[in-house]
Length: 343
Image (tube, rainbow, N blue to C red; front, top):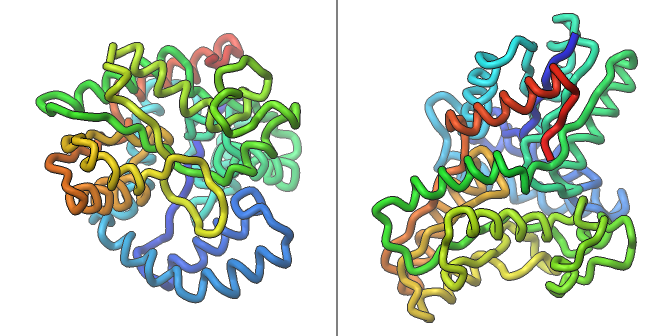
């Protein structure tokens, strides 16, 4: 029997340092997130970062925490519940990090008699620190605990026309009655070296802009190219003025070159250039989370206004948008009936 496994990032169990610390430990000790040798990673994470970061992160989580729990978890559960209503297959929800583990989700499917799983990483774009680590962890769990289970992975859907359409419609709704000077697509940042590591040709990616516009097999695993492509397709779909749209990257670690331009730098730059009414789209995520609700909707707004900005709007992620649910249900049902995956 076929079934579906949806996987998102994950969350601490509560907005307390006690629960944030083990969550951050699992996240930051992932070799695809901090990709240095294990000894250095252990020293960096457990010897330095985890000594102070949990308290700071707990305060940030507390600012966005809902009565029902973590926004990312709640929104992912709502999304999964709606997808279940539109398919005959069992649908399980797992998280890459935290107590809602991928293993538990696979066990849930296995207990229902599922022996063929469609794995859906809930990330539009391919990155080793998001999409890839979900796939690797799922396959590790499969080999160790469910060796007879067959798993098919849905590809990154960053340029699927159906995804672009529903994303564009959501953005258009968010822009209603907002007279913007500029629209910023802020994607989650990754180190530049991740782009090069993910390049199967080992020579195409140059992080200088030219490579993103030259066709290559490297684009299949190039996060930077895929982010730019999503923005380009949304701009075309909505017929947005190109001179009023740009990309940036948020959430970086210090002392390491990450993808540019940096979102926080853009928040300070725009008002100085007369762009004082800003809309921000966080299209690297399908569910609102700490990085969108606290870093962009709260901290970003404050930074932009302190730099002289006048109006600021964060456009929500797709979350459990009915159009987005319908797209996902269509994809999983097509896989069930014909083994067809979105392109």
